Amino acid sequence: MARKQQFNSHQTKKGCCIEINGRGRNILLALNAVLLAILVGVVLKKEATSPLSSSTLEKIIGSKGGREEMEKKAPSTPDADLRLAHDSVINLDHGDPTMFEPFWKVMGERATVVIHGWEKMSYFSDPTNLCWFLEPEFANQVLRLHQIVNNAATDGRHIIVGVGSTQLVHAALYALASTEAHHPVSVVSAAPYYSMYSGIADFFKSGLFHWAGDAATFKGDDNFIELVCSPNNPDGATRDAVLGTHAGKRIHDMAYYWPQYSPMRGPADHDVMLFTVSKATGHAGTRIGWAVVKNNEVAQKMVKFIEMNSIGVSKDSQIRAARILKVIADGYEFPDPKSTVRFFHFGRHLLADRWQRLRQAVEASGQFSLPQFSPEFCEFFKEHAETYPGFAWVRCEGEGIQDCEAFFKTMKVLSRSGRHFGAGSNYVRVSMLDRDANFDTFIKRISSKD
Image 1 (cartoon, rainbow, N blue to C red):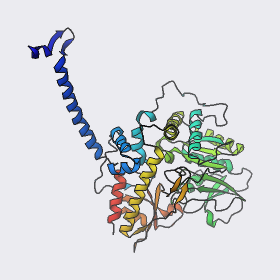
Image 2 (image 1 turned 120 degrees about the horizontal axis):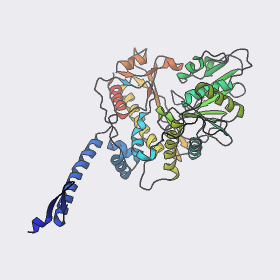
Image 3 (image 1 turned 45 degrees about the vertical axis):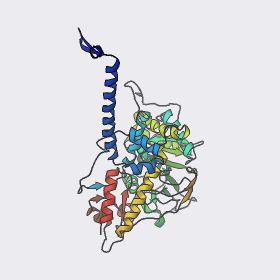
Image 4 (image 1 turned 30 degrees about the vertical axis):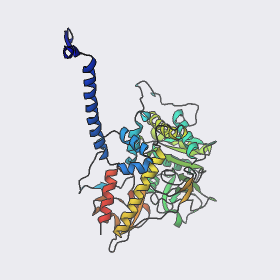
């Protein structure tokens, strides 16, 4: 009789339901617990085989608790679980910063933005601002993050938003080129320079400016604009203006001046400084950059260029970028006691691990060499820190290797030849920012190449 009382079923007009009482409820709870344990085991097994290994996670997070947090929260996606065939071509030509995906998966809803269909429909963000298409929340988060990291002087400066830093380079060249000059302004940068600079300067065939090559060998007059990238793309070196500050004008590309790549030496203080979420946070597809501009007239001209070029900048992208920057800033300003995962720590430890493995592979091969960087005191981490660039500037040293890019193709690795950077064909630039699966395969191939 007792067993019959445990499970009493009855029919209703809406269907069949089962009443569970007493011991029966306990039995089902036990069954649910068993099923849950099985499911958790499957999930953990799957996560254990994800590109971000447990050992790497522990190095990145710095604690067992942090590692467990990453393993529990990181959802699985087809991209994250990608496994390469042994003969797949790896494209490390572009600096596509997908390395940061695991961090943003952990952030989940904190980094999620919902924009309703009726929101952000106007051209205008803030008509009272010189940069009228700049979303106030994006500007606030930019200033907030710069204050936390202390990598740029922003007091009394204008913030100009652009479609990535590429549009901002165009805008700055337009703003700085003198319309009264009798010939185009020479645009220069010290080799090895970012490969896009020459194309940006010459693409429109403007009568205002033209590409004039390596700043170190420039012999023109004082009517020039020097592009200074620091830390430098492609070689990671800390740069100052080669042509000095007594003449000409300068644009400082600060895309990589963030703690995951370089020791923070204090706030950069230049007339025009360019930043981008592409390398700051990894969100290259958002296509958002910003300029910190000292001079009011230069800022006005940059805004005018963007007006004519794209009639402003996507509000949707700015809102997403603002949320991303906020998540990073919150991690340092209002740390969650239950979480040990913070963005700059994550990025720096992962890059440190990758650079260590690359140097070991290069040494084992004997065919290549890499730049060396001296540790410097980092104002952000409050300790001496190494430089871990987002690109590896690789020199082919092997006997008979004249074209390093072609040699890398024999390993089915796409790189970018040093010729595009004003250097020799014995150099290539290789991205350090790709997904784990690609990077791991690259390390295996370069280690075994002889």
